[in-house]
Length: 178
Image (cartoon, one colour):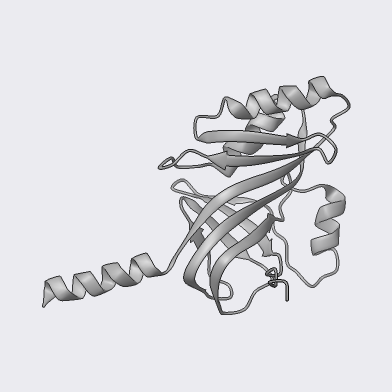
């Protein structure tokens, strides 16, 4: 009976999951191609990053990760700051498979925990985009757009010893074309 209970729990745990697929970071302060290349090289040195694809026109970098590696959003941010620049917008794409989230409860994706500020209880399925809404991960203007309306309660970053915790908003799900 214990083995059966364990198998049911294991199947439920595997069925309801979420995983970060990629991160898109817009970098502030870039003035030339050499600046953009410096940021790209700095991010490529981070051990868990597989590939950095720059878009020089939008000053964005799309980052994918090595399989089986633990990722750190703070480490990505530090690599950008280490190159002498700042993060203007930090968003991630995550794949969800029937994952239930509860309003006010953290959403765990690997070692990261996200407090989603604009959601109610719901089941997530498919790819969704989260935007980090904290100082250092979004420009002051961006923070004001999300938090200055009084609709969302944005807080200072809260980091734990065992995991990274962030406040984020979930972008609306993209509807399939009809």
